[in-house]
Image 1 (cartoon, rainbow, N blue to C red):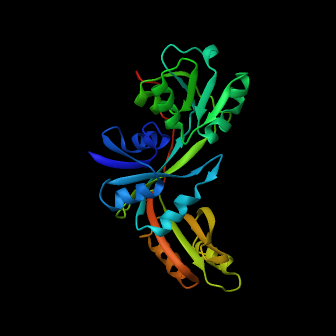
Image 2: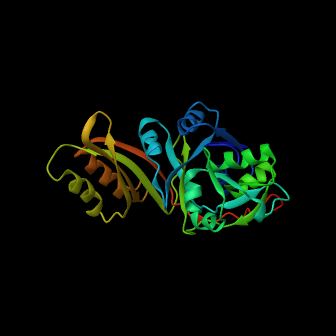
Image 3: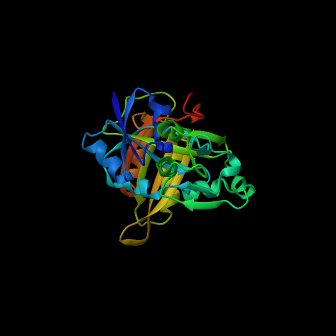
Length: 283
C-alpha cells in the first residue's frame, strides 16, 4: 500500500483528494503542517504527499509555493477537486434543532447564503473543516453542526443533513502530488518551474518570450517576493509539455541565459476536474 501524507486531520478535503487521485487502496498519513508533509516524503515516512496549491475562489496558497522552492521534492501529478460543503450532524439532529455551526472561516464564508437563511445560528470558527466534524462528534450534542467534506462524515460516523450548501458551486481546489523523483514521461503533460530574472531591461518580457518564440502555451504565472531582496520577485510558471521534450529543453536553456535562479519543479500529467461521489457514511 502506498502511504500518502496530507496536511490536516482525517476528513480533510486533502484526504478526499488523496482517494480520488490514488484510489482507496492507500494508507493516509495525516500531518500537522504543510512543511510536515514535505518532511514525511523526504524522510521516507510517506511515498507521496498531496498539497493544495490554489482554490478557484480564494486564490493561491503561498506557503506551498515557497516550500516547493525550498525543498527538494518534485511535482508528479495534480487533481482539481470540486469542493462540496456539507452540513454534518450527529444522528437524529434536525435542521430546526441547530443552534451552532462550526467550520473553517473560509468554509463559513463560502456557505454564507445558506447560513444566513438559518436565522439565529451562531457561527464558530475552528482550524479546519475536519476538526469541526470531529468536534461535534466528540461533544455528541443534537443542536450543533459542522460544515465539512463528505469524507469527514465517513471518518467520524456522522450524518449529512444537507449537501452542496456552498454559495458558489464553481469551487475547485487544485492539489499537487509530491514525490522524490520525476515520474516517467506521459502524454498530455505540463511542467512547473520557478525562476528569477537577472536585473536587465525587459527581463520579464524576455523570459516569457522564450516560450512564445516556440509556441509553448503558458497556463499560469505567479509572482512571489524574494526573501531579503525588497521589490525583487520569483516567478512560478506552468507551461505545456514535458521538460524532456526537445522544444521545452530549448526554452529552458534559453531562459537560463537571462535567469539568476531557475528550478524545475516537475513534469506531470494535466489533472482532471473531479467531483467525488462520496455523500455519506453508508455509500
